Length: 231
Length: 231
DNA sequence: TTTGAGGTTTTGTACTACATATTAACAAAA
DNA sequence: TTTTGTTAATATGTAGTACAAAACCTCAAA
Image (tube, rainbow over all chains, first blue to last red; front, side, top):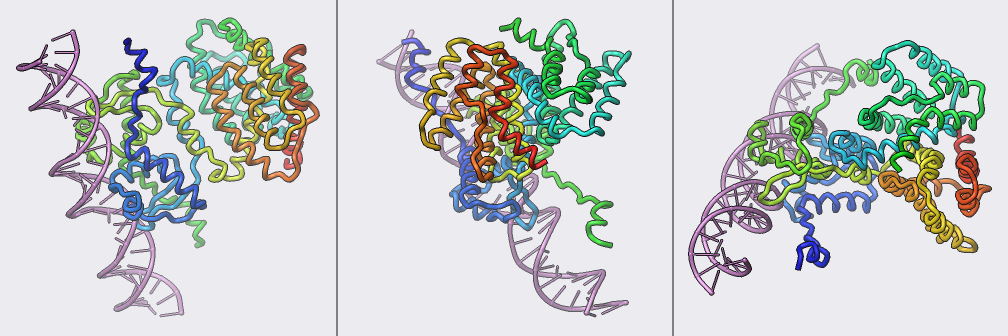
């Protein structure tokens, strides 16, 4: 019988290490006991004893939770539960160089989707001050070289997310940006939409939300064209 | 002088553990040497020696990278670099119960933004088969109880993301869903938009992309109203 | 050619020991 | 009485050793 036929019937056994198991158990434990941020956790030896494992393994699992920001430890006070930074761990693995092409493409699209969906939030939160600052950014980019335009492009869209008043969203898009840029470099020719940043500013100032959606779509049209071509 | 005044001038010193440092160093090392997925890494003892640390500390750092999916280890073969699951670590911390309210709200909005920005992708990728399946889901939800409607709500929007053809996006929204639902339960009265799922299906079938954007906006209008109120 | 035995290597786990930082308690000094 | 200094206790951080377990290799035997 061929190997791949066998594989269908007998999947390779999953060999979780103790640290893997303990990590899950600890997370379940924290949840079940409904600890609140700031609450003190049992000490390492107690946990290790309770789980019937060495302090070594326990610490490997704790190290993971500590990386996620779920717990903090002080030398004598012991461990306390804390609020994880939900984007922190995401940031660690979001490196264009280690992500496969399919996922890179997915992230590229994800940013397009975010950009397109931003209008409703903007219209709820935008202020005259915001728009003035955005206009400042847009005004700077005429007649500058490519390097500057890229930096300004980031500044402009970054400011848009800032206006959305959503810190998580803003941080998220900042993290997505390098991947977005990276995918662009894979393409040969530079792409520019028919609607400029300044056009978008003017729509924000005098236009309607629907105008803005149409405008943003036109601004990003070259990217959508590419998706269409690779369909 | 008051304590918080002092804090402004003298920030508490950050005491990174060795594991923290080693984790960063390892990530830099992997990047600098531009390892490719599948490449074998030096063995633990060699790494520990090179870094001048105990195998213990090294393993705590490795444990983190292993959690992120950046490396895999086999008993004798040693460690190999692998592709991290970019959403895996995100999933671990995305629990409504341990996230602060501000971030919960941010995530709620994030999902709204995604939903609103989905139209362009849908129009590039949708097929008749997709729409038929979506219609099936929408048809089922008439005259059912609340529990069923929630499950169906998830199925419907899940299918939408599936049509987008973007696996990362789909997984992402599935992970966001519990948080979204959780925020909804914080609200008193249930909210229903003027545009139903079936309406959206019909727009997908016969309408334009712009119609769909307007429709989706109306569908989610109650949520945006709430944001507006809490402005 | 396949099977089996034995040896080797590398990770996985356990245990011990000690360093270090932090807290608490108490004594001493202003 | 309040502040400062000292000491002891304690939990985490780090190091080191030892061995188990799994995977691989080689070679011999069926």
